[in-house]
Image (tube, rainbow, N blue to C red):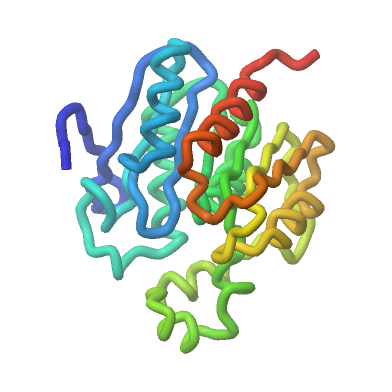
Length: 232
């Protein structure tokens, strides 16, 4: 992996790799999915978009993934949320647009709850809040499917869809019509649970979970472009 321009912060004794692009506010923050990192197709496309627009952008790897230290099997949603919060607190200032992919969408929702005053907007790409709940009947099933038991337990303590989600900023959810990992119903449940009146769900025809095809990336970038426009 190309480690050029990778810097590190320490969070709870864990060394977390990040890339920070300097630029104008609001700062874009990309939150990868489970077992993904900051060098994926969507992350790089968003970084190139930020460069073209002169925007600041932060992307990073959770502990145990990408260029960060640690063992992936030791990772938990709680630890990765802690790392994400530390990253935005220590490395950015001013308003934020959070862009969370799959599990990263779950983390983004928690960040918006923890730092509401900084939220310009939030975009969820195949967002997967509560996947330890709807994806698995219990911890034993999660383990059989390759999900670390510690992660499953941590996720169960951070469920969101069982009550209203007190987020008031604009939210855009982008979901593939044929997503076999995160059912489309999860996107509808998320939309209904959010308190914000400004929530839109875009369903991409024929789209799977990754949403990394060129026309799907274009849809994601158009969504972020829209969120940059001043409120009328």
